[in-house]
Length: 384
Image (cartoon, rainbow, N blue to C red; front, side):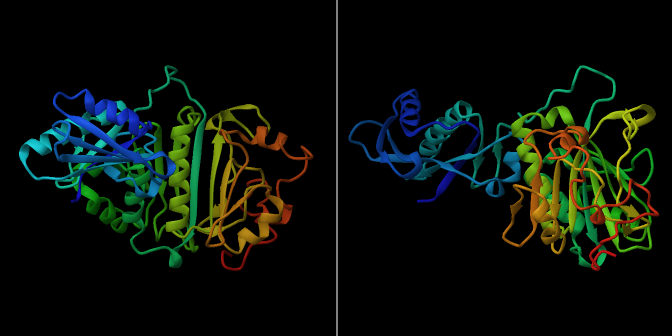
């Protein structure tokens, strides 16, 4: 007996409810064999009392984000439960009955059905949609940046970015990409190989990408664009989406996964507000000034103000951990820190400091006010 159908759902439907759902299908009779650990159960489904079961419905089981297929992530937001349908026989009638129950369960649990034999997903259309804000003006965005050292990054960096985007936040996929406007690359047309080849071909230039809302755009710094050893990847995401806990959770998964798998030594996510200078005065720039810690590929140090999320590999992790209350230490020794559950701008984060005028970390670790000629006094030699 093997798994024939898998249902990844956002809403938990308990075993008793699964049995009731089976009864709604004519001629099918469910028998609940009991509830096991964590509230999962096994429902045997037959053509009537006393007859042998045709198939079973097993679950729901909690499932980790890393174990959810990309076909599911592309169609639904926040899947976290798994049901498995096992066929006892292999007749067309048995599969038809199992398919009917599975589709009903998929609808009831707001999920996605995967046929394990063919890999096909149902429903075909995506339910993963964030409505665009009605305002046409500039809105706050969340800027994510990942910094890595060229000779320490994986050789298949571009391919891994695609894989992680599909797995955790498909809106970050480079639907269009290129080193100049209009963007010439097209992921749907050219496939993954087209994107990988484009980054290798244009390694002297910055590659721009456009994603799907709420991703507003992003960049990859070219390998040969600057003489220094440090490069970065960036994404801009509409803040409105990240106010939603489910979207925020998926984005955080992507943030951490890229930082870890692409071997980044530092990563950040900060809220940027439209048209403000450092002193809060309206400017003609699209978004407020921010500390960009690279100059011609050379690392300048950590930002001079707190950012919403941050990630640190060693040795930065050990340097900053005593100054970041509540930071989470990962098994590999890296560090993730979040100042607040919801996205907050730097002024709000400064107000959270014990002394509003005090630095968020010792000043010797920070670049000096965004001036690229004034790098941090203390920079780990690995990044200098």
